[in-house]
Length: 285
Ligand SMILES: O=C(O)CCC(=O)C(=O)O
Image (cartoon, rainbow, N blue to C red):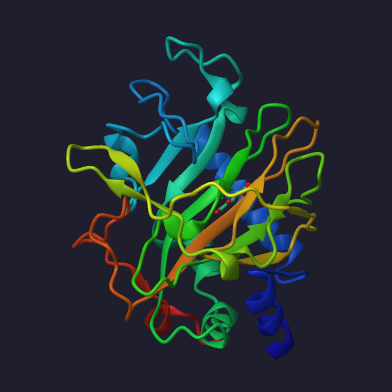
């Protein structure tokens, strides 16, 4: 593990193949698909998800999803009047953001002892788990994720966010695998922040003069069962899924409980759901 942790600190990301079983992928995917099937489209806000600058503004449905299970559409799933133009089953870009708390199969998976052990190997003293998502990239419609750093969305001082990203299916250049700019976490501080704007929406604040630097990205295909650790400052992105094969993943984020959490971050703990304390809830085996 220590060599892998060194690699993580060098590159800003680390892929660990065969981290979980095919049965885990099957169970997590099954539940994700059931959730999409079960949720009621009627009166559902037509909220799309994109990490770019212009979305979310005025979006309560998004801002209040940190302790709930909510559904966010693909950009191309809706017409300009908000009508669904594809099958509901492939219309969702992601489900978020409290699967790790509210969905038993996701909770069991997210609180395994070996994740706590990894958190300690990464240097966390008080690992907190938050912002869990299933990210779907359905065939043909699965959208791209533009370059970003995760600390933009989960800002602590000092920075402490790390993404835990689990490939539930094979991820390839054709179906929208991850791309990383190796070492970019050492080259740049947090470049921008997405904050609550005080009037019910969010805005981006640039923290440096050039918050969108040009970088060389490497493609990182991953087999189902792979865990990828993503440093909060490493620039990463993923492409469209133009192929006929889905690329579905589960992810959550971790922050250090001892590092002050910015109160204007989009996701805030609630009295009913403080951030999950992995030391306290991780399984014994
Ligand atoms: O799964 C993806 O395509 C993007 C995930 C990502 O960028 C993230 O979780 O920060």
